Every structure is written in structure tokens, then in C-alpha cells.
Length: 85
Image (tube, rainbow, N blue to C red; front, side, top):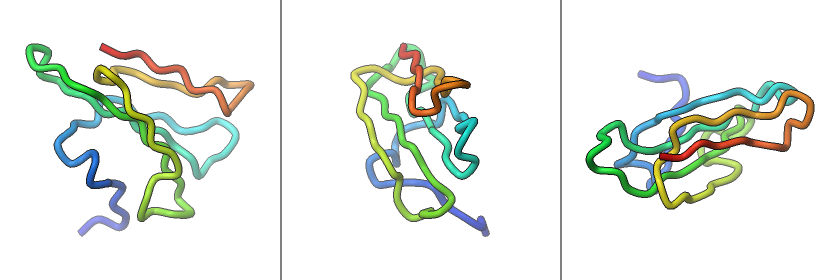
């Protein structure tokens, strides 16, 4: 049994393709969703989760294509760079 489960109904059929922790806020992390099947690419999603609220993401962003990588800026932790397929 997992201690915490970070998922939503909107991400049930998507695969986690990227994950990164925020450099300033140690309880915040971002998860990128997409597909590893490169012949079947669809929409993607970015969810920002906090350890303070494990039941639902703090932010949800939809993308037109799958997310392949993401990272927070080291000096400006509110900036999130995302690479899509």
C-alpha cells in the first residue's frame, strides 16, 4: 500500500514522463504526463502537487502534445520550463 497517491481522474490514462522538485519550496513538485508510445501521441498535462495536500494537485495545465521534460528555474521558482513532443 502506498503512503500517498498523487493522481487525478484526468490523468488516469496518461503516463508520467517527467518529474521535478521545486528548488525553493521543498514540498512542491511538478509532474509531466504524456505517452512513451511515439506512434500514438495525444494531449499532455502538467500537475503541480504539494505534500501539504496529497489528495488533489495545486495546479493543472493541459497541453496540446505530450510533456517530455520539465524543470523549475533555480533562481525563480515560479518559472517552469516544459518541453513537449
